[in-house]
Every structure is written in C-alpha cells, then in structure tokens.
Length: 144
Image (cartoon, rainbow, N blue to C red; front, side, top):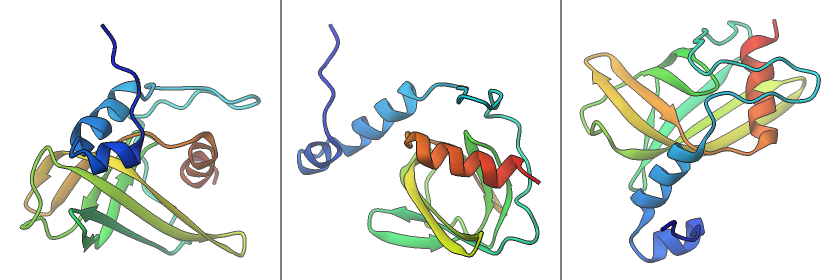
C-alpha cells in the first residue's frame, strides 16, 4: 500500500525529514527530456565552466559547510572538494549553489544525499528539484 505524499514542512515538523528526502531521491527520474532538448544522462559528469564564478555549500542540520571546489557535476549529482570531517556518509543534506550567469545571480538549493566520502571531498546524489532548476542546471553544465 502506497503512502500519500507528505509535504516538506509536515515531514520536518513530524521528525520524518530523512524519510521525505529519501522518497524525493527515489522518485527522481534518471533522465528526462524537455521540449526541444535531448535527454541528459545524469551520470555524465562535467567540470563547471571556468569562466563562471560560483559558490557551493552543504547545509546539514542547520550548519553550512562551504565547498572549496566542484570537481565535477551532472544533473544527478556532484563531487565537491571540501573538508569532510563533520559530515557523514548517507546523510541527507541541502546542496546550495550560487553563480552569475547572463548578468544575474542564480541561486539553487535542493536536497541531496552524501553517497561517498573521501579524504579530499564527497560525492552527492541530488534529490528532487523542479523543471526550472533542472533547465538552468542543464544550461550551466552542457551549454558551452
């Protein structure tokens, strides 16, 4: 029997935030296509364009951890070079990304799961984000 979807606010208030984010991760399609664009395979990792300054961070239990560098990123996840001493493998976190594009500041924040921790950083699998964010990330990553 399927449970009815629960809102983010209700999940957090009832102490079910981890279950909510895991459900979001499980429901995200591996690849989708938008009208007029080809499907993007989430595992095709690419470095961010060098000419676009960005800030990236993780938010875990109210604490912000700044990334030194995004080594590579795809529509499905990223590898961040950063201090990992306070973070745990398997944690559900918020991924924050800010960059300048076309004369405007673009900010995104959405759920992610830490799927691997190494000495120099960690790998993330992104959770749910809407079509507008998806379209902007595709443009950032794959339009050169």
